[in-house]
Image 1: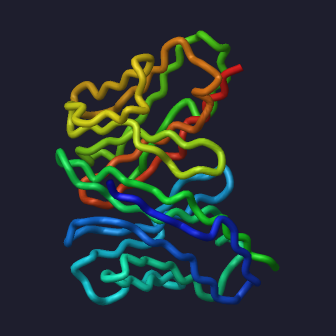
Image 2 (image 1 turned 180 degrees about the vertical axis):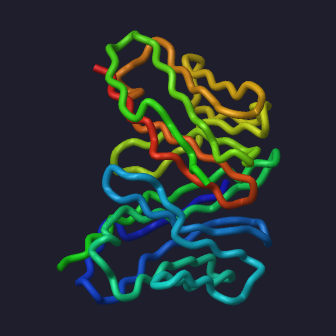
Image 3 (image 1 turned 135 degrees about the horizontal axis):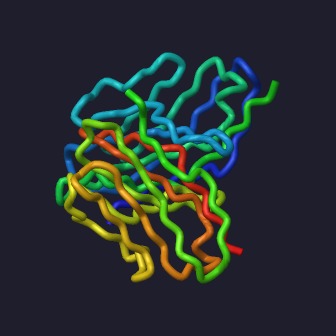
Length: 116
Length: 111
């Protein structure tokens, strides 16, 4: 069974600084996707960034980038120039494909607090 | 793109009552998912539809839970004879590709 592990339950970062959130996963597949989602307090789950495993280049979306290490099954999220609006729960997710589904398995999440 | 829409956003019900949640996915998305999320946890998969066919159900989906997606458009999730343990946020999501988009969720409190 696929598992997703986020080993940092809580983190904090000073505004404008950089923070890295860790994620490891387990899979026997060779081609797959990985996702980071952000969930602000009492608000919607929002896609932050997506990585396709067959691409060697790490995905980047503005201040968000990933460090994808396929052999190590590691998928960390780096947030540069942290802003107060980045305060949220961050979930790493892996989609299990089967029956045409892309059912996501989520990690337990990392609660990020950006401190002014 | 109107996004995934869910209603009601909040529901408080007495134990033993039935509740129904509705989800309107992004219009061109053929895949629709229901997840459950409790405080401080990541979402857990409940069930999946491709068009109108319910193709997967989690073991979390007890006999008191039923989901439908008539005509492959909106979906409903009904919980019968609610229990306090059903208190959670019920998330709907939809996709056309491997990227899944979530609604704002429906909070259920069973008292």
